[in-house]
Amino acid sequence: MESEKYYLNLSRASDLKDKKERKIYRAFEILPGALAWVTLFLVVFLSWKTPVFVAFFIIAFDVYWLLKTIYLSLHLRVGFKKTRKNMKVNWMEKLKKEKKGWEDFYHLIILPVYNEGMDIVGPTMDSILACNYPKDKFIVVFAIEKRAGKKAEELAKKVEEKYKNKFFRFLVTKHPSNIEGEIAGKGSNIAWAGKQAKEKIIDKENLPYDKILVSALDIDTILWPEYFSRLMYVYLSEKNPKRASYQPVPFYINNIWQAPAIARVISFSATFWHTLQQERPERMTTFSSHSMPFQALVDVGFWQTNVVSEDSRIFWQCFLRYDGDYRVVPLYYPVNMDANVAPKFWQTMINQYKQQRRWGYGAENIPYFLFGFLKNKKIPFGKKWHHSWTIIEGFHSWATNALIIFLLGWLPLYLGGEAFNQLLLAYNLPEITKSIMTLAMLGIVTSAVLTMLILPPKPPEYGKWKYAIMILQWPLLLVTIVVFGSLPGLDAQTRLMLGKYMGFWVTPKTR
Image (cartoon, rainbow, N blue to C red; front, top):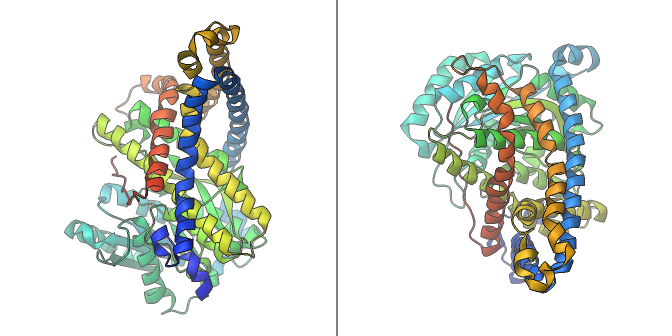
């Protein structure tokens, strides 16, 4: 296990003692940002030097974007249809009829808290209680931070008094603030909470590791009643359930009516992206609230405490630990979460950017798994190639595609010189690009329709006109994919490239 720990517990290049290996890991850290910036530079440079070539490239790229939009829209419709269908099923009834042994399993539910109040925590706890599943199989860990001070301690006391006797076991943990090498954030908190639950409950009561599923839930997660029944049904339906994590669909709609239009578009876009990803499990990693076997968590030493993207990092830890024999299984079942909303509009915009940048910093997993692939010779080459291409291409597209289409697509007209601008191609380039992009934006119609299907009940203080705004808001997508898509993605990758490592930014919760 010593050799496995050697690369399983890395977080950045400086963790490596060997100078050569440190340089390799550092090169992998530079790779995502370098690819993005080289791409953008070449588009600008070639628009000046070879404008005809770039003009044809832009047209071809626009066609590719159109085809990709159609492809993703089809996946979205199928994924959404399956999810909606599963939301109507009594999974506890199916579990009892069709699966054996489900009664033997416990669910360890970890709820990390920082500075949230009872207005956020209460609905989450109530949703767990409302689940159609035996509560005597729930081990609930309420994980607070010592650095949050008295406010967190008082909240934990209230929650413990109200909910302690409602579950098999209830544990409050307090994550210390002075552990060397840790990043203050969700990862270090839930890692501490998981280890405390293992020591104080699971090991103490001799509960079998292979009969425990862990659900690490963001504190704003509102569970649908059949979540654990659906999770257990899918788990028992898998051929090798112990080698998989289980991913629900995050619906960012808890406070969607209170969110400004741009924030709603961003939240719905994230919801739709994760919905269509359920149709592409070969490309999935764990994200935000998810579930996994406790034994796998123990085998990798719990979540890493010094990374920002612990939710996806835990997948790569398991993938490397089990020599590529690990995957993500889509649940096609939702959990409701908060849209990123602040009391004031401009603070909402700032928070949106910071959240997207934090998500974009998931690029820190690229050097981690690339270095792991070099060291682990047991993982099949095909799997290494597939995951490397999929993840790197995904982050590269995140940082560059929208900029190429909406900002850099006109560069040949401005940099190509008088000779190029006299060509028929120069005259037609804006019209061709506009026509292709108009067709691509027809996907907005699909988004608008799906928006109406997943909206929670409208609060009485809003009039019927609010429904119309939910439809009319979607042209804002053209702004959001650049300002709250490419730019924070490029920002995050640039920081990683320059060695300006990010800390964990806690998204403020407002309802």
